[in-house]
Amino acid sequence: MADEELRGRAGRVGERARRAVEAGGSSYEAVGALLEDVLRPQRQVQDLDAVRETRRDAEIFN
Image (cartoon, rainbow, N blue to C red; front, side, top):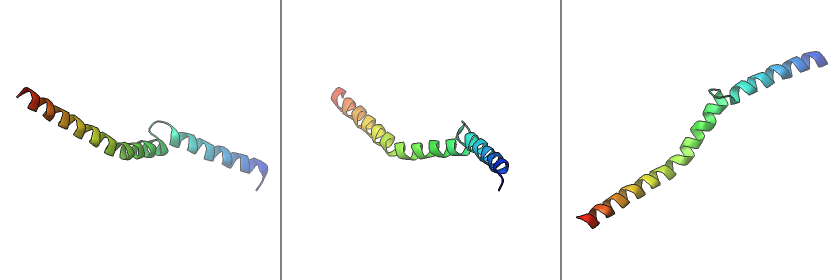
């Protein structure tokens, strides 16, 4: 493979990689989905704690 051909191919691969990590790109979206999956249990625990606190407050005032 000639140097010029290799550089051209590397440039095309680099451009595809840049588009993948831009907002809306496939890698950008995949990382966002991963973060949502990782953070979801933490948010559920926080929501449950908020419900418990609300119930506790209701018991105090009733």
